[in-house]
Amino acid sequence: MTAVTFDTLKFVKTLEASGMPAPQAEAVAAAVRDSTDSADLVTRKDLQIELAPIKADIALLKWMVGAIVAGVMALVIKAFLHV
Image (cartoon, rainbow, N blue to C red):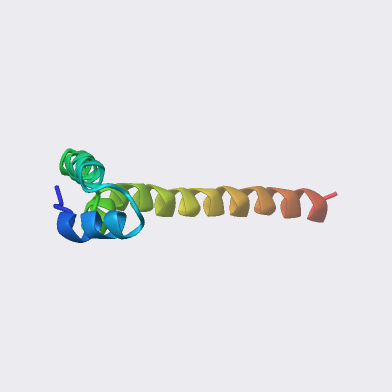
């Protein structure tokens, strides 16, 4: 799990600069911080680990489809050459 860096002070200051009262800005910042703390984030490495078996399966399927197409083409050519 990856941690998210969240600058609550900067966030509160930004909200206050836009006209939000300080207590409300602090409450919003706390809510955002709590929601990001409980979030499970996926990294690029996590995705690569999960997708590796799928890529291998796709490569195998490409070879299988190629072999089937070649076999069908051979049968079609054989059927038309010996008529």
